[in-house]
Length: 101
Image 1 (cartoon, rainbow, N blue to C red):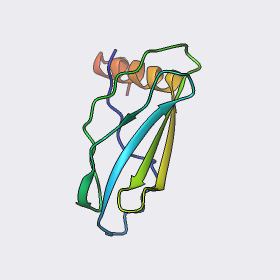
Image 2: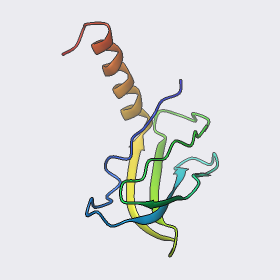
Image 3: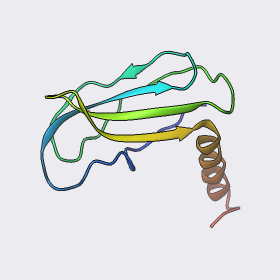
């Protein structure tokens, strides 16, 4: 199943500072990496690049690193486990079906 993850929690301060950013995605399993295109001149970048990774096991974790494109320096990190993604999906389904809040 495919899902969408927001950039919440990447650690980019919303200080109005514009910059050029991109995101790299990797996993704790040997299943490749991904990278978005650079989003130029944004203080609140939105990345819509799809990533497809094989699900190796339920202990798999994905690491999203936000990079300043000018310096290639990491400016934010978010780590998301498969279990957490699946639970979020189940919670959304429960709410949509009227079984949640």
